[in-house]
Structure formats: structure tokens, C-alpha cells
Image (cartoon, rainbow, N blue to C red; front, side, top):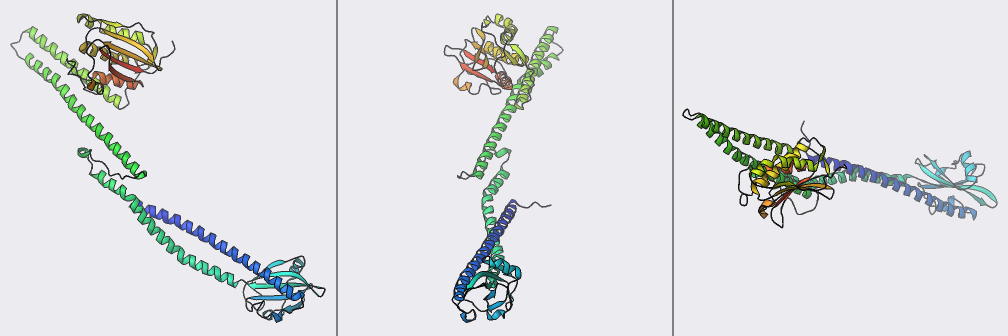
Length: 457
């Protein structure tokens, strides 16, 4: 089934709405005109009854009025006694009585309006007004009336005008709606054509957006912002693949070299052991990189699993410090845990230990002097700091410190995949916190993890 174009659907909806509006307006105008014509006829009958009553009271004759008060073929009058006998009547009535017994009873008490489908001598609908009058002491009833033909003719003309002008107005309005819908949808069509031309190779292009502040321009700007996010995401993924390939290429090449050397028959057992040990180290390095990449991928998809439990911060930092105690001693470095008020936080202990261990590993690898682990409670959040006495971070590195494969090689030599701080940031965000880096005013780096507030002990 072929879908109806949006422009046509908008036009049909507009036409339907206009039809309802025109029909409602026409019905209102028709009823209002009909009501006004009826009121005008009643007012005319009152005036005529007043004039004819004055004539009758002064002894005048209905027949002798000619056309000054009673127009032949359109109006009529009749004077009857209270028992219903006709005293005088217009020529067109031929002396035939207009009022029934009930009409006589009602009209004796005051002016009474009556409707008739026809009257003698006039085969047309009529409206009458019966009023009590007195002539020479005798109580009579005066009946004046007029046909409704003028009113009916006016309403017929109005209906004919509506039946002709209504569809014409609807057609013109629908055509205008079709043109307006086309003009309103033209920017959308321009966006659609441009969007059809955009591919993964041309994500730098943007949809055309006008200078107006309407809904379409806001839609265009929103879509352009989405394209920018897609472009940035794709660029990050491409950099990620390139960097991952680069990082994996070195240990794979070394592993291959060690295995090829180990296959040589002339090598001694000690040389074979050293080659196998080196290959094992490279395998471990590949495993760590693969695990780190998997953790980052899960964190970006919002699926980094956490097992939250109440954790004493001092105990956590002591565990991490103990893990690096031998390495610090071998490098003649001081590794201490500051004596702070120890809060309890609800975190995934293993994940947070992994993140804090990455920071300590960086401090031992790239920093100098003493390494201190400390904690602090700031604005309801708990911060876990790792400080060293090294050169700190270059200013240009601070903004990209937590990007994958980002390294401050200019200031900090050494090996590494550049994934450590990215994992720190991923773990912090998974807990609803953040990671930060800074260079202290006294020198040295300060890297800390901020997690939601402490639980009561």
C-alpha cells in the first residue's frame, strides 16, 4: 500500500478542519439571520398592529386602508368580535375567520403571536399577531399578519450563497493549505536530500538550517549536533582501533621474535627458559591490554558490572599500598597511607582497588620521591588521592589525561599502554563519581577519585 505523502495528509487535515469551520460558521450565520428576520417580522407586526389599532379605534375601516397599512398579497388584517364573528377583513381573506376558539381565548388576555402554514387567499406560510382593541365601547380582536415568503426567500438566497461560496472557499483554502504545506516542508526536504548524501566518509557535512528560530530550525540544529556527536564518536573509535593496533603490535612482534628464537636448536636450556619467560611476560601484557579494552568497552556501553558493598576507605588504601610495598622498597621510594578520618563508602571494592592501583602504578612509574595515599570528604563525596613528588602534568596533557592511549611522554618516560587513567575514569563514572588530575602548587602530581558520599559507621 502506497503511503500518502505528508504534504497531502496535511492538506487533507487542513481541508477537513476548514470544512468544519465553514460549516459551523455557515450554520451560525444562517441561524442568526433567520432569528433576525423573525425578530424583524415580529417588530413589523407590532408596528402594523399599533397603526391599524389606532385606525380601528378612531372608526376607520380595514378595507379603506388600501396599501398604506396592508399590502395586498403580502399582508392582511381582520377584525373579529370576541365570539369569533368577523367584523371586517382584508379583501384577500374573503371574510373567512382566521382565529380558532383557543386563539380567541388566548388573544383576549393580551397580544398573541400565531403561525399558520397558510391563510385563506394566500397559499403561503404566515405569521399573525392578535391584539384586543375597543371601538365605541365594543371589545374586539384585531388580527394583523404577513406572509413569511420574504423571509423564506432571503434564507433561500443565503443557502444558495453558502452552497456555492462554501465549496469555492473550501477549495481555495485547501489550495492555499497545499501551497503553505509545501513551503513549510521545503526545508525538511532540503534536509532529507542533504542527509541522503552524508555517509561515513563525509560526516563533516551538515544539514542546511535557516536563520529562523522556529521548530524546523531547532530540529536542524539538533540533527547537526547529533551528526557532530556521531562524527566525534566515529573519530574516537577510529583512533581507538589505530591505537589498539599499535599497542598490540609491539608485544605481538616481541612474542613472535622470542618464540622464533626459542625454536633454534643451538640455544641452551637457559636461553630457552629466558625466551619462554620473556614470551610469558609479553603474553601477560597482551592479556592486561585485552582486559583493559574489554573493561572500557563495557563502561562505554553502561554495562560495567558492580558489586556494591560497604568498604572502609583506609583499609582499601592500605591493601593497595601493601600490593606495591615491595616494588616501592626495591626502587627506594616511600609509599605511605595518610592518617585521615576513615569514611565508609558503598562501592565495588575490587573495581576501586583496580582503579587506585593504576594511579599508584603511574605514580611509581612516572613520578619521583614519596607517594602518599590519602582520603577526604568534600561536599558529600569521598575523594581518594594519590600524590607524588614528580614533575606533575604538562598543562596540555591535563585536558586529555583520561583519554584512551593518552600519555604525557614529553614529561614522563616509561612504558605503558596509556589505558590506566582511562580505566580510573571509567570506574569512577560507573560509581557515579569522577576522576581528576592536577599539578600541586608545591610540585608533584595529584590524581584522585571522587565517589558518592560516605555511609554512617
